[in-house]
Image 1 (tube, rainbow, N blue to C red):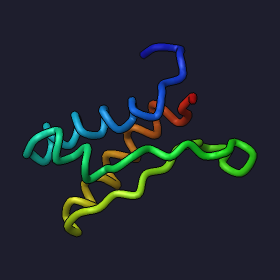
Image 2: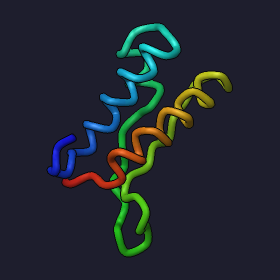
Image 3: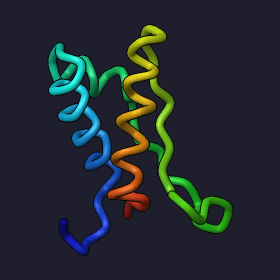
Image 4: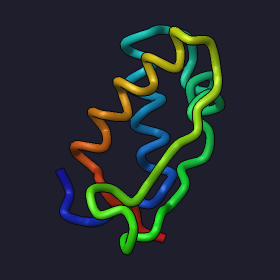
Length: 80
């Protein structure tokens, strides 16, 4: 794991990769379902400074939420 802080696109790419392997389908589908990664102010968000607002079926949303927990544990902050 790198010591550098990733850009907002990094968590999205990692989520798409995890979801492609775990739930199938194509990475492009998952990138679209995850949506843009929103950088949040550290003043109000100490544990993590990014959020996603995913779309999709209830099963897709559940899979994205689980994957986001894993990614957030490894990459709680984004730069940019």
